[in-house]
Image 1: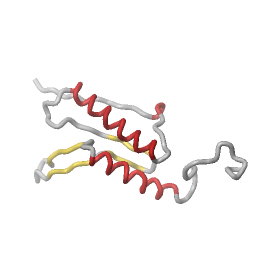
Image 2: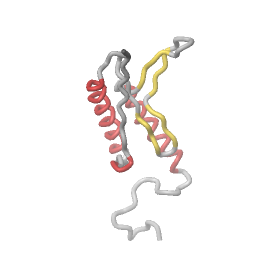
Image 3: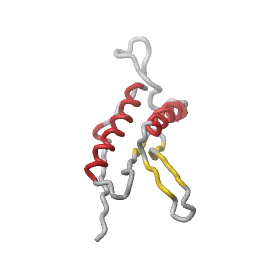
Length: 118
């Protein structure tokens, strides 16, 4: 039997396989993503052809989210971006924790791409 009054500790959240869990995650993650955007995290760039300014914080599909971050200029060194990205991860984790969720370290990875030209 899944859950019920004898479940110790009580089941929290929507639960795996619950039909409304994806739509609930959309509601929760939208608030966290907006919080991240308001805090200045994410990517801000100009499109190549139209030079239109675009910005975004992450790519998300169901319960998998890729949080991304760039430096304010192309000359921002990697060590500065690492510190800024740690702030972004702390912000994302804080939003998850406030919603009753948590990061799973074994499923969490990061990559620094620091290009240079000669």
